[in-house]
Length: 294
Image 1 (tube, rainbow, N blue to C red):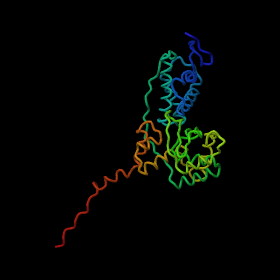
Image 2 (cartoon, rainbow, N blue to C red; image 1 turned 45 degrees about the vertical axis):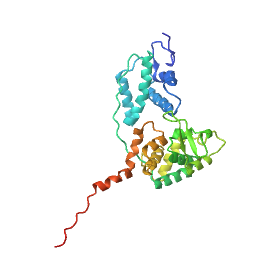
Image 3 (tube, rainbow, N blue to C red; image 1 turned 60 degrees about the horizontal axis):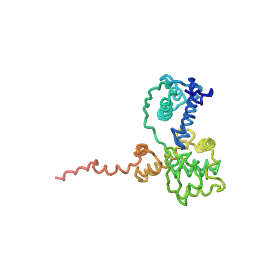
Image 4 (cartoon, one colour; image 1 turned 45 degrees about the horizontal axis):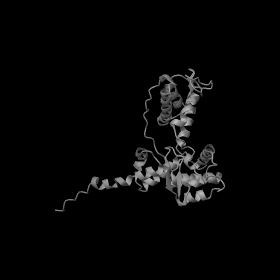
């Protein structure tokens, strides 16, 4: 069998590859180019750091338990840990099939709690966006675009002018790897048109860490600094909640957001309270008629 390089990224020599080396060897086969692949790469690099760049010939259960403990120590929820371990499992299974790992651990999905979905009320949006605008017009326009389209931050940043029509936008860099096209509100269209046309895309110049830094400063300015749920992703939740509360059926909301399954969209089903209004007449007790006066 051929030998591996000493950096852990080459072929086999009995010393093993690092976890990052396995990813570099197999990522083009396992994952298509997409925002999801970008996230997977970040997950694997994080896990590789926990392992200290150790070269691997096998992957025993205690090594997996160590990673879970490290992730929990960093405050990751079970849902987040499950996403990271799903990427790890896919990579390790490929390495095992290729004869690069002698053994695999047993992956058990951690129990996830149905978390509270926080969204912005109109007054909160107005205050937050005003604070963002005071710091950056570009970031204000991005925030407006995000809340009116429900796009993920990476999807919006990846937009190019060729992806944008007169009244619609197509997202190609998506978590699922599947493109989707949605119509634009007047406000979202204005946010795009106000961007500098000389750039390749309206938001390609934005760096996520800088946008998040301005976001957190702005939410402190408007009195939302103590709410840990007010992160940029709340704009996607806000868009979804407005669609559902406005009477849009969940299947269309699924298509708008680009969810792979309807189950993901069902997190917002509780907001469609008007669907239950028809139950009230059945449950309401009619007032008893008073006995006629003697």
